[in-house]
Image (cartoon, rainbow, N blue to C red; front, top):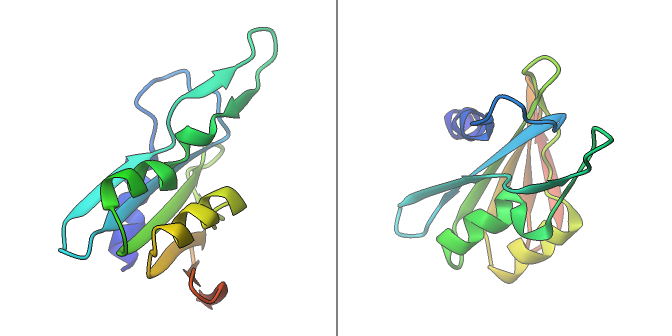
Length: 131
């Protein structure tokens, strides 16, 4: 299970040199037939005069994985800090939680830091923290 979070972290790493985001997020889904699918946060809208960005709702890694996953399955989400490459909190945002519930995902593993991860159960909206 930790291996899949580390793989999601590798998927998160940027493919361009001048990525202005402060973090990168990658996601892996295991379909009910055992096939693995993956995605990272996608297109972002950048302001030209200010170093800022705004992720588009369709660019979240979880949503992109769900399009490949179909219904059910398990999702692994990892966020990597641009500052030092450490793993940081990757619990899905409220918008992604709605999508994950609607897709009937069984559980979501997410990074908290380099030493902890969480498991979110969409059907009961409960979390379990693992150290």
